[in-house]
Amino acid sequence: MKITFLGAGSTVFARNVIGDCMCSEALRDSGFALYDIDPQRMEQSRVILEAMKKEKGGYGKITCFAGVEQRKAALKDADFVINAIQVGGYNPCTIIDFEIPKKYGLQQTIADTLGIGGIMRALRTIPVMEDFARDMEEVCPNALLLNYTNPMAMLSGYMQHYTGVKTVGLCHSVQVCAKSLLETVGLEEKLEGCKTLIAGINHMAWLLEIKDKFGNDLYPEIKTLIDDKLNDPDCKNKVRLDYIKHFGYYCTESSEHNAEYNPFYIKSKYPELIERYNIPLDEYPRRCINQINAWKDEYQEILSSGIKEHSRSLEYASHIMESIVTNTPYEIGGNVLNTNHLITNLPADACVEVPCLVNGNGVTPCYVGKLPVQCAAMNMTNINVQLLTIEAAKTHKKDHIYQAAMLDPHTGSELDIDSIKKMVDELIEAHGDWMPKFH
Image 1 (cartoon, rainbow, N blue to C red):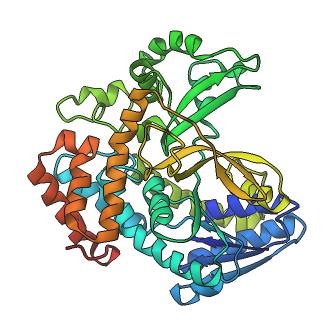
Image 2 (image 1 turned 180 degrees about the vertical axis):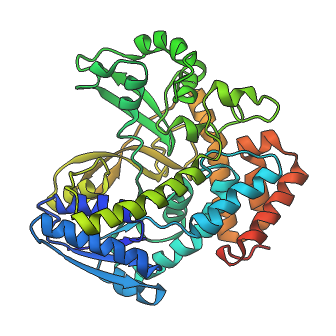
């Protein structure tokens, strides 16, 4: 079996996902093909993975493929393809995504999923993923693409709409959703045996049901504890708790993410909200710098002291591959098209995050039905931006980029139309060759 990892220079993530495969009897003897356009970063990944392979018993074979000219060879005859690329990296593209909007008075926290930063990230990533798709259709047409790259719904949705590649989008926020809520409100003891139902869209999928091991609904008790936490100056999860208070349900992704997916919390006219809700503006650039520095130290430590023990993580990828190979049922929260109206009050062309059954037949999405109307309405404010960005990527019409930015809840609530269009033009120009040409 062959597993290809696109963006293998993302060393920590490659280590986790391929390390997970090395923990699986069904996967550990696979061929692991590493692909990246940065040979130096890929070499760091190879060194670490070779050390892990040795520590895990020496199973499998690791091969490296550097540069676009070797991409088809990396993909040829792959059974599974993992995508974890970041087009343009922290410098220059992430810096551009934050600094230019700031000039217009638009503040962001993460900027990788929605908002003007998410739109720009999608537009520079989709052409690369389309190239991946064309190669996969030629050299590994039956492979399953496991996409981990953000913006998840835009990228997975594009692949599912416009290519023939079997694609499922994966995020780790579903697995930790109930845990994060129960720990925030001090009900950790309820986690064992907890049962949940989660559906919506990536980073804003709703915890529709949360029950203890005896089947008791935990929401009534949770709701009695929310106000105390919202008044706690040290609580870092206030936006999602506020969702429960005003929309009735908790959602999957962190409060720093969700602070920028709506018009409610980052508002220039209400600067006091930033402190009130503990919103970490410019969090992603800070995180990038810290991760880059931490990785340099960790890599040197690994070279001098040897590889650390790896335990299988919560990431879905290895479990999906193992389930398909062994025909063993497994449930995930996957990002798939809403083609068969899995969620009846969201559009059929939206990319939704729903429970999926995995077995020897692949990934089969499960019917959910109707979301609470207020949850569907919140999702739609994000889906509008996602679909327009996908349309811009397909048609190369700049008007669709303008429209996506105008309809983005945070951008539209802060800026007038002329400023939005001027900002979009400046961002496109600043990204230069990282972006396709729009007309």
